[in-house]
Amino acid sequence: MKKREDNPFKKIPTILFPEELMDKAYNRAEKAADKLRKSTIGFSLYKSRIVEDQKVRTAASVVADYLSNIVKRTPSLDNLSPFYREIVEILIDTDEFKKSLGAINWASQLIRKLGNTYSKRVRRARTPQEASKIRREFFGRVSSILKQIYPHLACVAVAREKLKNIPTVKDMPTVVIAGYPNVGKSSLLRRLTDAEPEVNSYPFTTKGLNIGYSHYGIQFIDTPGILDRPIYERNDIELHAVVALNYLADAIVYVIDPTEYCGYSIEEQLNLLKEIIETFDVPVIVAINKIDIDEKEYRENLEKVEKFLKEMGIKDVVKISTEKGINLDTLKKKIIEVLRSSKKLDSQED
Ligand SMILES: Nc1nc2c(ncn2[C@@H]2O[C@H](COP(=O)(O)OP(=O)(O)OP(=O)(O)O)[C@@H](O)[C@H]2O)c(=O)[nH]1
Ligand SMILES: [Mg+2]
Image 1 (tube, protein in one colour):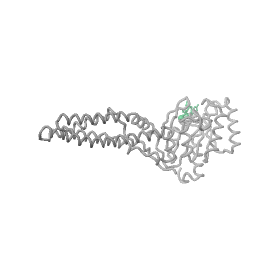
Image 2 (cartoon, helix red, strand yellow):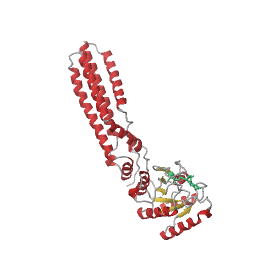
Image 3 (cartoon, helix red, strand yellow):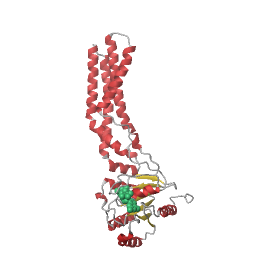
Image 4 (cartoon, protein in one colour):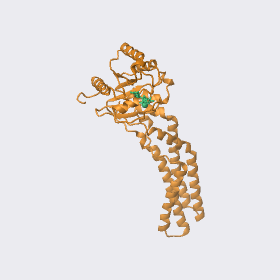
């Protein structure tokens, strides 16, 4: 079900808050009224009726159109692909989000309706003072409706900030880089692609998905670190990785740090590797990273890794150093070979 998906949430317009929206409505109404004042000749009652009417109708349409536009340009959560849907579920409370859009839509319709009602009332005013009083009453009602939906506007504004950063995923051979936190996944993405994700010496530097492309036609997705624990205990950051593995991976590069400089034991890292192999039905390539660090100190761990890989029957293993650039070409070749043999990559591409 994989297809190119541009992030549909980028289309949600910037959310204005009640005062900003009221200011916009006032300004537009004043401008429209000014034009009319200049071009209308007539008795003062007649003139004030049409000027105030213009203000009411302009303000009503500015506010109602703005609100309905938010709803229209927000993609329906029900039509999203499973990948997007799950990422959205991680990032926001979708029930609250839907409720907020419902409230914004309700406000838009109500303001449109009130605009019509007040427009009629203004046109029937018996004095200029009454016309302007009715117009002021209308603005008061709009303002209080906007205040009422303020929490809903805030909810959509917060959701928009989170959702617009979900990266675009392309329909092409895809390798997901996974592993414990701090083992060197983002450093590897930097080495294999044009992407420049943040790299730091502490765990959970990567909090979402980083995507990079290699010149040999592969999409690489760097994921946040995952800990070896039951899925219901995993935090939202880790779940990004699980969703990417589940929906996007044609192959997985599992990064191991046998030096334990990452802060996690080799046993924990191997347990997670076992779970990944058993859960996801795609080839797994193991990249043993940080081999630039003096080997003597962690030789025992390397032996444990090798014993484990033998028991699991994993042959696609490359020892690398992303820091010193060791064996990265071998890893690239291995990735291409694995994708070709599972028919995910054309044989001609190099
Ligand atoms: N010595 C050495 N250090 C490395 C190597 N690769 C990465 N590091 C260091 O390991 C730390 C973590 O690197 P990252 O690339 O941020 O690791 P990550 O797996 O993306 O970490 P999270 O995003 O937090 O899960 C950084 O301090 C890197 O400089 C390597 O080959 N050798
Ligand atoms: Mg990272």
